[in-house]
Length: 450
Ligand code: S3P
Figure 1: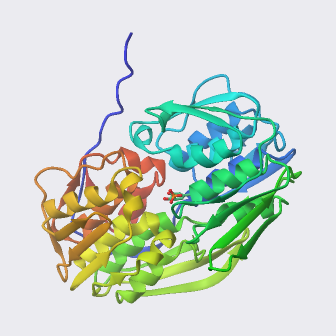
Figure 2: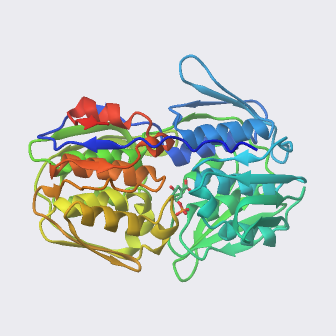
């Protein structure tokens, strides 16, 4: 049998930039986009989503929701419409559900699949097939679903759901919005109340959005300060109109690029600044970045602002480990900021970075070393001795991006702040979250070359 050929890799080189300037908007928030499509699929009637991220990850979730029987359409104005089937009303997909690179897509959909009386087979790309799924299977098995995966907890994985799940109270072993969300979404399919306990708060987009769809989610502190998040099961959700804010995790790339380059001035408009996502902004300010939030407002139940940054020398910092959940996806680009800063930056408490789209601690340490940056890789973090200005760059072997969009974008930003160009082995994964990244950065004054 012929094997499908792997997608072609596309190496790209980022040239040192003198300055960047402009006002841009970044694509919609990936986390919120996934949830809007999924929750829209659990209502009867039309949900309207503007600003949806049209990156590969979210498009894979749209395709999956269609396979589960929802109608999902994009109109000519780029607005998305979802006609769902009600809580518990999804149909069995005819084929394997392939989520590509998307951990959020697969893990949250497992929560939905668990609440339906049929089997669903999930798979993904080479990166996603390496990532642990047991963290989702364990609580959902306690609710009555069964899971069978390759090597135990890897994709491909079959989820056998139940019409009526058992409500549980589950304390997450790591701060993870994906675990919390999978359990809460499954909890919508259980009678009574399902609770998730978090000792460190993770992003709360699921909680906010279930409420926007008319569901009941309550959050209360436990005696020791942990959060108890409780969803009421078997609600009748009502369709909603959702405006997806710009993704702070995507805005991070032009913002850090501008922060690093003296003379640069960039504003990213309409960025989500939910406090549970805003750790990078706080950290950059602590490093001395000239960064301000303007025009702060609330859109679609989420805080939003225009973020303006001017290039200025940065200083190394020690990032408090308990900040990690609020900037978990931003450590690769923070490592780039640290590389150009004056002094040492220490980031710890980051074991979770080893099970993202790639092992991000190892990928960053290896690539930064190749670009001449002093970096020490710890079991749970990185220590970076900044170059107090431009990093050397000029790596001979292209940086290995390991199918990881954030590693790819981080090293392209590093090239802008280097003395000599930085080359990455593959820009293709950028399309998972930020398909227009190269154009947007070019519009600000960056130069890339195949
Ligand atoms: C996400 C949660 C985070 C984050 C991911 C998106 C979400 O993962 O890294 O990119 O949308 O819930 P964890 O839940 O594994 O921390």
